[in-house]
Each structure stands twice: as structure tokens, then as C-alpha cells.
Image (tube, rainbow, N blue to C red; front, side, top):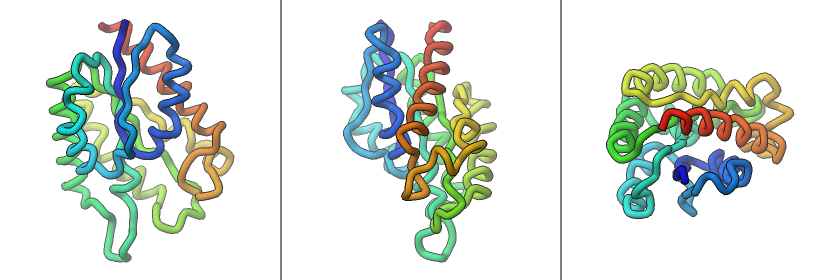
Length: 184
């Protein structure tokens, strides 16, 4: 049986339960009960969940929306260099502990979202993806699943996905996990 772990923010909380169901009995899945929030918080969770994640073959992980939030009118929550460094640190730890690591790009928001900006999301994705690829992390471009119809797939909070949007993400997550599982 292939063991899969899901890490990340509330976008993960939306798609992971559906992905677990779609993966079926061939996969044993783990995900924390709590939101991974921003990159530094997920890094901290790697301490708390080390034992629970023992023996997981494939990690599917995302962070980003909290990091690119503009909450105080003084810039983004995580500076570019800080975000990239933290993501590389998370990837390094995960790559040492697990056979395969998949990073899911940060999903876009409805343009009406007041504290997040798609150009900033795209910029942070563009900064981190090449660095993670160099390390051997597999990229799952969830951004491209939502972006073409962002208003259709985004809920009334302008940030999270509708049930249909979460299902579309889960389908892509399952597709990538199954492809990676063939490499084990």
C-alpha cells in the first residue's frame, strides 16, 4: 500500500478529503487536523507530525496564500527571500524523510479579494517553483486548474474554492499522485 501525506493551508483542507476518497483503498492517507497556514507554520508542523508521517512515501504539499497576504498595508506577510528560503527548507526536510515530494502551486483568488493579488501569487509561484524543481520536488500546477475560470471555482469569500473547485483540484492532485506512485 502506498502512503500519502497532505500538508498545507486551507486550500489543502478543501481538496485533500476528496482526493483521499478518489485515491481509494490502494492508498493510505494522512493529513494534519490543523491548517498549515504560512510556510513557517508548516515548517513547525514538521516537528509535531514527524512520528505520524513516518513511512509516508509521497508528500503533496502547498503553502502560499498566507505568505502573499497583504494584511497591514506594509507589504506581503512573507518577504520574497524569506518565502523561498522557508519553502526550500521544508522541501529539504521532506526530501530526506520521504521518497517523493510534490509541491502544489498557490491557487489564484477572485479579483474581488481585497487582501490577495493574483499578480503577487503568480510572482511567488514563479520564484519558488524553479528552486524546488532544482531540488527534485515535483510540481503540481494547481494554479492552472483554477485560473481559467477563477470566478466560477472561487467561493463567496473570494479566496477558497467552491465544492466544484475543490473537486477539480482533487482530481488534479490524484492524477499527479498516481503518476508519481508509478515511479516508486
